[in-house]
Length: 318
Image (cartoon, rainbow, N blue to C red; front, side):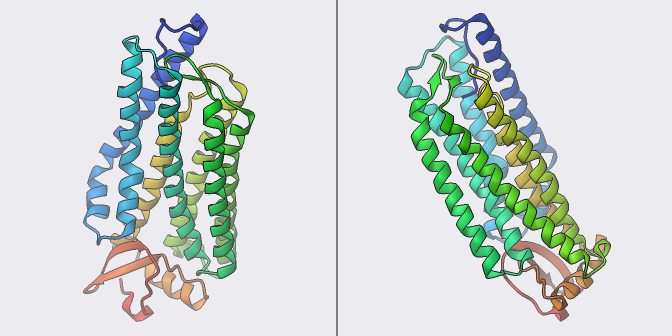
């Protein structure tokens, strides 16, 4: 989808320049993600790997580390080969594109699962909200997979597997995801403003963290998905897939930092002594954040999990 377009291909010099641009931006996106991983490695070890085993740890592992491995495999397998003048046949190009879009789909699903669990907790497992979200999520995944199955065979490529044209139906692949993530964001905002009427939000670091991270994560994911959608729709040349690598990087960045920030908040309670009063107030208000499990070791809060484990208010001590 995004690789270097060698001059040997039967495309114009303008398309060659576009191919070089997509290659440069692909390398930049990968470098950004690797850099962000390295500068946060100390906190990852402290807040993720030293915490108790849970599905959250493995979700973080996937969201944080798999995307740049996928990017590197594409850069080595396609960009380097194309730079040496290798030409791919149509079957090989479709296999590479299926691999790239499949990786993007799995990453999107895992990140959205994390966002769904946040909604599940914020609404105290309200069956109407959660079942509605689950139905929408399953519908989204089925629809997106179906669209990929129907549209990938109709993609047009250069001999270096750069996408030059996609069917009209492919536009809905991105818009479906945009619509679902907008729904999750609106649910987050609704709960936030509902809580504002109950308690002093400045004394509620967990809710502030949830809403703050939900807002910036939604904003950057929405922006890159929208840009990707527009490029595929408007550009019928090698610029079409120019944002693919950046979408992987943005999804990885957003998903990993959302999880890391929650862990940091829970594992350093001395910075936020109001966590206890916040939790007690929330339970008294009937708005239990059941995804925020505070494991205890003596008198200290030691871990945070996206799970549905409950503790008595008496056990929650700063």
